[in-house]
Image (tube, rainbow, N blue to C red; front, side, top):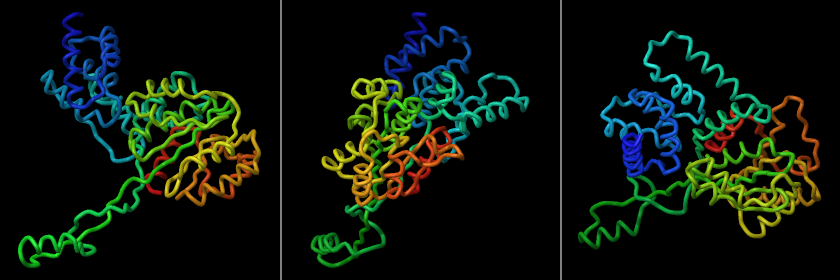
Length: 359
């Protein structure tokens, strides 16, 4: 075990040098996993390290290169897809050639079917094991982001004439030898996410925060997250940690109003007095059970709609066909929403991620 620990510690150090989040806690998890596996099997060592040392899909190519270089083994070939859906990616991860046997054509359909069922099930009705699997798939979600035109410029072959660069070149060379052009740069559109952590949202709060973590990981500078209940609490800094579990532990330390009531109108008023949502996509994740004055919520939603590029309300109950927005909060906010979407399952969050990527 001493030799194994030294070998895997050196491997983790190599991964950290390559930019993978293989910290001490993840290395200890790897050693515990290897205690139950055959360490002479390269396939088992590969997958144990991949599942414990990598924090997200961005780490996988670096992990493959480091594993091949460090152990001199075969680099696993994965079919990568350019979609925000995590289902196909996870199925490939589970069905790749770990077993070493021949594919009999039955494992992949069964695994894909089970994942497809979990994608559409309400997270409030999952078992602990099923919820943990959905959360692992949530960590692989690629939070794409629509882009907006910036005020900054960059050089281009076509576009508006860049007079300053053209004149500087002429002064340096003594004549106008070439016309310089410029165009506006683009940047990700900011997303402001409000997560309701009141008692009525308790079955969905952890999943919503894991979705917020995926958004922050994908665009740290263009995402702002707040918890709402009886107080408005910024939690963006806590969600910047690479590991979702550690990030949620940090969030739990700073949020003082878990499982309380919801006074969204007062909190939006506080937000608009301190910050701005101009040009941003505002996402409010709540069931609309407002304990404050619904009229105040309607007034603040009107102010918010005038500032924001889009206002999207995520309601877990919207996923049911017989849902009607009859609560006071939903009735007050509904006239000022660009969209009311479901937020009860992994598939719903994949659709929301697609919406943010193409807003």
